[in-house]
Length: 173
Image 1: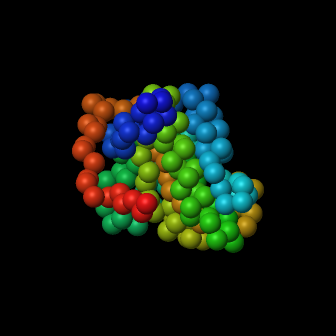
Image 2: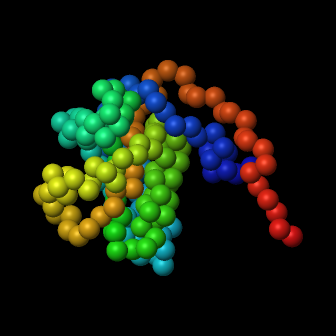
């Protein structure tokens, strides 16, 4: 089996991270992999916002927790958040952004970094204050929040691989 197929089979979502920051060159490699995700008609409209600023990361975590109605850190202590957004006008925006998220998580695993897809980016970036934040970054237009890809070093044991559920594949010959 090729290395990429093995990585697909063994990557797991991480839900406990060390506070140590991931080096920028590693973050850049992970982001680069995200930019190579397939997109409808190769429009390449999803964008990635790398958040390593602790204050902004904590604000994103807080609003995510409020949406979930919890007091826990929904980012599991991860020091890096890669926010993936896609242009709303594209009918394939959710699919395109989802492919970016998949590439980010596989690249992170390949580079020894834990990751987890955290939802509620859609709800977050529908809020006026977060739309204003995007504008303050120079991001113009209407974007759909696809996901928050949290990154960091795994704190503890890497999750075990669970058996695959049967009867999920059908062939039509």
